[in-house]
Length: 319
Image (cartoon, rainbow, N blue to C red):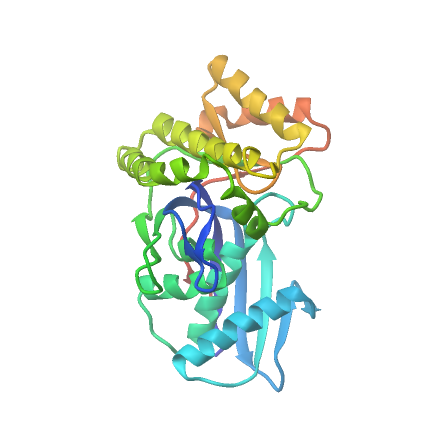
């Protein structure tokens, strides 16, 4: 029986922004993320006469298919298995929402590969496999909060569960401000950012900020989690702005949204922002403030799309 694997996407609250090894996808810094309930990928793999990747019911023949099968070939070689594969995926992650769909996509793909070949792995071993497809995918093996320790090689670079069933009142509002494709890919941005004179100082702060965030999560301290996430995201984008040449993912709407979050906070509605490699922001809030924040953004932005998410589960088998 073909098993369908579901993995949810995650958002990094302590960012990963730079590779130490692009082949093995080893990061320059450790990261911490929140897995989201509203965004996920379902994937199943079955034997086939030819390699075929079907996404949302449409056969893919572009770079996405190449990336999928390059990853699967690596896994086949690693485990000494063979065969052509039919990969069928359904992606429930808005492509323009500024969320890394690759995190759920490659976590689900790694899980489906193991299910197809009946390979039994621990979560940490599966996390290492998912990392080879997309760095952030290693964190989507787990629900709630997870930590990706950067490590120094293939075996030591993996994610682990920090708290898979958080009891803290923490909501994430994914605010879609701009649907255009970003001009600079994340891979290119990571390389360019390292030319900033502030990149190395930020890198040196990584362990300190990670430990502070871990403590905040364990203490269920919303204020500490939000302020640390906002600081870390701001540092990442400051590094981009001070790179040589300088670049940014921000659009005018991004700046306006950042100011709105600050104004809301000053007016007693506690919330914080985080931003990845794109113009769209994510707002960390408590449930009691979701309606007021949403109403404010709907009033200020035309045709804005907002999705309210909370904690999602780890990788699961649907059948």
